[in-house]
Image (cartoon, rainbow, N blue to C red; front, side):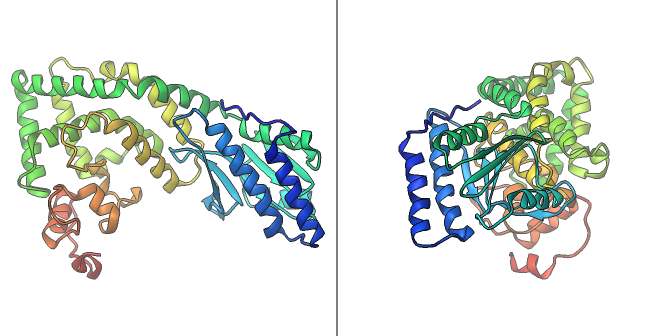
Length: 375
């Protein structure tokens, strides 16, 4: 949990009230103006809670997101961490607004109730875990500090466990990846069934993606699948994913061959169970599907690339690219990041690469006009 080192006599508190006083002298009361003063105060507070921490929060103004019902909302600000997890929302109103009515309207639209601050120049209502935690006159410096501390120091239970897991496993995962690499290479020597399945998969990858794809790159693809398959499956709740996605199904066949002799995937990954649960619980706080994917992308980049054997190959969960439900489109940045297999070639996908990709994923339709133009 973060601590906001702020007192009623702090210069930031005085500056906020002075700014409001200046607006009042000018007769300025509209929301856009008075909101800017409180936004500056929130940004100062964000800097304070970030001191000494590697994972920095950022106040993002006008942050759009989708509710559980799929409706788009745009609060005045959102507190996000480097994993894109949302720690709080802020909604500003002016003195002419009936704050209680405005709060009711926002909740009717589906605004989250985990940690949201509704604020006007003289009043603030802090709702946490679905209940009004504070309702104070913030023209008082003491009350203003109380509200700010309540907002910034709130920690959802899922995030508390998540932060512990991040600290514990960030250094452990690369070593686990190296251990997995040794197991894969060792089994290739003594497990004929696995060796044949792996060689077949290497041939398939080279045919579909790049004829010069290194064996080490395919090994890493397999290891990344073993380490991340549970997260991907549980966060997106798709039990039939392996059956519907060609590349995932092919990798899973190789994994089954790997476990045919003595290796146990469940036993090997047992020590990561708490980390997996922390990721799954954190993702469960995100209602929007696309935001879940962005969170998972960030988790992958922060953790599971730590043991990469060849940094030049951006094989970001490559098997996801065959399923449009996971927003892995075939063109633009997503296509390039997930499918393009060689670092020294142009990042613009060509006809042949698109054709190989579609053959790999069982897609037979011809390239679109956008594909042909490489856009």
